[in-house]
Length: 101
Image (tube, rainbow, N blue to C red; front, side, top):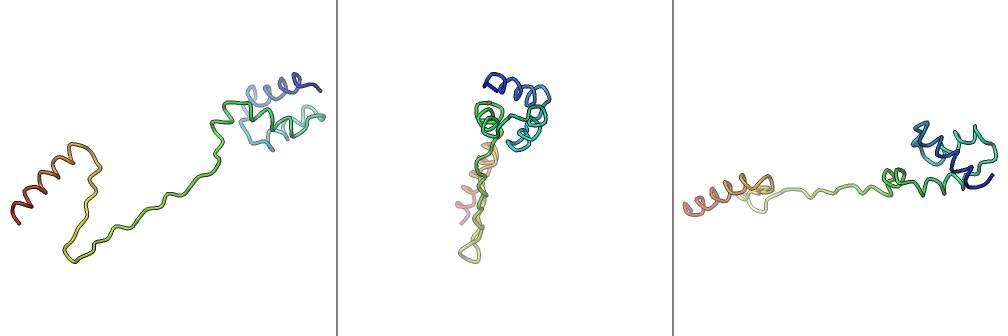
């Protein structure tokens, strides 16, 4: 089985039948249509496909959040990343609070 026949078969199974599966699943489904197919052929085919490259995730790292705490009894912390409008209001409030102290 030459590479043109392999690509035609795998294109049919992958795109026409809409089997956007992993290597093992695609190999299993394509093997039903042609017994001479090798797993290396399927792997090579998938590595060349844009859709497979866009949906393949190498490794997902878990996001680590740092705890929010205060050093002293009357200390507080505010997250000022919501929007510019809110940030400006908070800055004005903090400015007036400093004038009162």
